[in-house]
Length: 294
Image 1 (cartoon, helix red, strand yellow):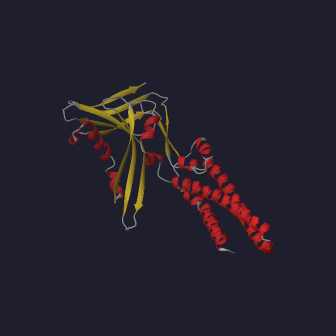
Image 2 (tube, rainbow, N blue to C red):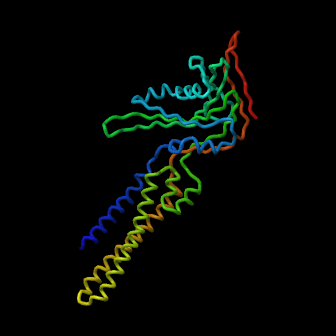
Image 3 (cartoon, rainbow, N blue to C red):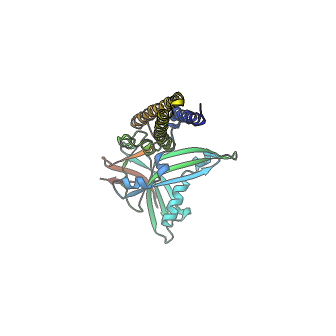
């Protein structure tokens, strides 16, 4: 076996190992809203009474991150509206309806002494453990909020968290790996794309090798059997690449169509009217305020 043929076999074995490792790459990755940020979500809103905001905090203590989960939200309101941090109050708002997401009401006083209020709804959260090569680690805590504009009653859309995707993933997978990349599985998608491209290039290269050996067999009759043997070897390698490329492409289509991807947010226009019940403090006692959206 010549050196070129040996290297080709080693290359195909490596590609086969990558193919076998595909299911491992299918493990759940970070939610899509972390990978792409809030900008794509803001484009999908049905109204502009609110906007999306992603917060990312990190610490070596996961419990401390959860305990201080509202600090990024309050800091954002303070920086955006010049609120006095010491005069900010956060209360939960009871939503009467079938929505299970909690809405928060943030009251504050800005630097001009003007009172303001902002509503916020947590859409999703994700806690990740990051382990580094220098034997250090930390937890990263991601939160996705829908936040209203100042002093306005928000009309929050309906938010659904899911790992399933529409037919677009299958359509994009006509280009190998693009469906997986669309679903947030970048490592898997790029591996499929790179492996498929390598197999196609290898098929062309092996076909050229086969053609060369066949031509030499017709020109050099004294060593015809040797050239014919090499021609058969390269033909087998070419056929193997064609089979692997076809199998990988079929796997790519099925995977894009049926397997789940990264968790993402589906935004739907609200169908029901909103009734909020909010606790309020008055000079002569406590009270409840009602807000009705329609």
